[in-house]
Length: 77
Ligand code: SF4
Image (cartoon, helix red, strand yellow):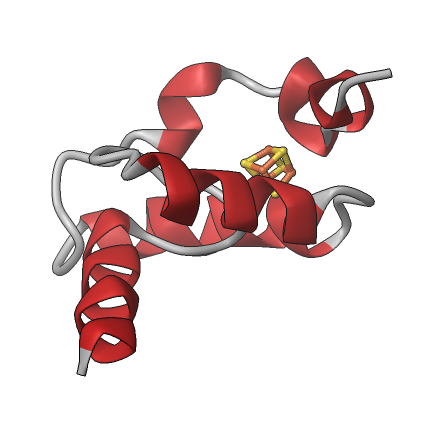
């Protein structure tokens, strides 16, 4: 079974996880998406996959694209 089969976001609007930015009005949307991730049983697998695959856009594993970029840069140092 793939981790995606247990994703809490399967029943959510996918648009929720793709805010147009990471500040200002997008903050509320990001927090709503994170609330789904925080009750997701596969949050660790999802975040790991997004980091490994270099997923550029969207919220995965409760992390925004900017947070994942920062984490990847930090891991390289
Ligand atoms: S952690 Fe978030 S984006 Fe990833 S599968 Fe779960 S609900 Fe979806």
